[in-house]
Length: 231
Image (tube, rainbow, N blue to C red; front, side):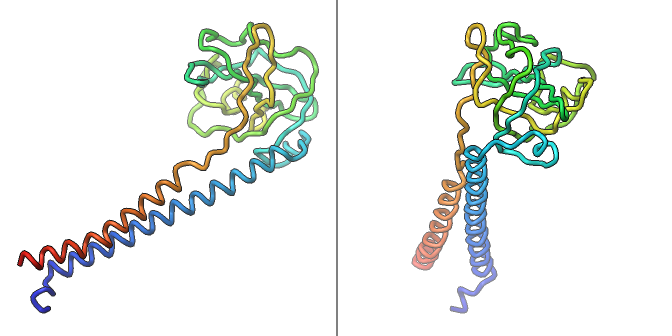
């Protein structure tokens, strides 16, 4: 026994203990991430089936992931495109400001168009003209840095701050994804697909870390036994 209690033996046991603790912690962290994702998905799902909120309520709060019913008129002068693929095909989402009488305008994602339509406003996919009422899901702005020095047809992300830097009216800090597209002409833009709420890879990662833990717990004693036999 004394022969085994060497610095090398102690260091090996400490390393194994630290490794087991680390792997278990990572597994629990992934399970916690999974629970957070499930809670988020449940809140979004509840918002999808809830009654739409009014625009005044949206403006006065920081509500997201809720259906919104709003009346106003599109302004294609400041329409822009953001690169997005659909079913493996490159294209853009059409982002058009929607002017509201009783508050700031709101940026609307009207749907997807093929990449051959590379300039805005997209004449083959115009919005319905005049005053109308639209219904969609209120979504938080995509995070990023920097606003271009001049207005551009194609933007890097869906962020009202980018187009709002050039519009003569303020834009709400969130945007609206239409429940259905404003299909015109050749059926463009194509409506956004039903919102998917995946749980992500967290469960698989958690299982992976726990398996690693098991390998260490089972494998280390076997290694020690082999070393003892060799000695």
